[in-house]
Length: 199
Length: 193
Image (tube, rainbow over all chains, first blue to last red; front, side, top):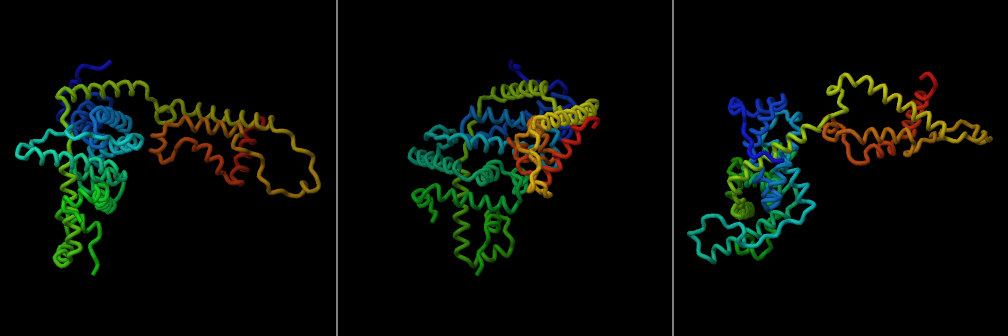
């Protein structure tokens, strides 16, 4: 039984900030949670996709993130932003899932949607091959390093926000980021590292 | 010369290096090379990111699925053990728990065989722990009750719970704690208690 479309009945809710929406949810306004989902679903989905590398799992996991958020909404204290809190749940959900699943294997060409018209065909192929190898290497990083790298590089979160999301210190986040890049070099192997001018 | 730390290199990488770090980088080939390498790796990682945009219908479909899942979840979720959620139940529940402990204590004492007559060596004051094992019926009751607690809510109030936590807690009781627990259970089991 799936609703065809979720519409927010009360337009006044649209004007509320996140803290007020959370309060509204806790007071029993189901519409308020729908609105929060809409505001954050893209970022949560993208986070999940970066961990699992395919649409189906990313879709399931992002649904689970919101379900957990709903269950734990009483515990949201507003110290961090709701987005950071959702990322925290998302990272936990994703790391739990990927730890029991084999990292996805990709074939070259599955992710080519960027505008690469300026590149020659061999350049495009090389770039795609490198991207696949880098993604595979990121998938093999230790959990916190991987989460730190994804949040910092692709979600442009500050070190402070990442520290809040991962429950660690800013210093630990910076150290994890540094080691993530170092391990990436090792995982990519000497061939690619040399080609890219890394010694 | 001391080279830059991981933290200082990351700050420099992100253009937030302290003046002292910048000065060090101007004079240190090793750190400069390391920074250049980090920059190249970061660029490579940035270039590898690729999240295809799902179909435009996906977002509506997903929010509808979440809406339904939340609605279904909300209907069945009851945090039964939290006193604030069930104020009118708090006292009867507490009384029922006490009664359950008392019954379990009576059963335990009846099922335990009578001790043999004291011997010369047994007549001496003993410091041995009274028999109270982890499979004791009254302790099983404790474990059963604990196993029904909501994990999320327990962690919220600072109780670290995991599968088998109650069993572990019982196993980890010291001799003194076991004696005290048994004394309490026996006290509850006494007629008129």
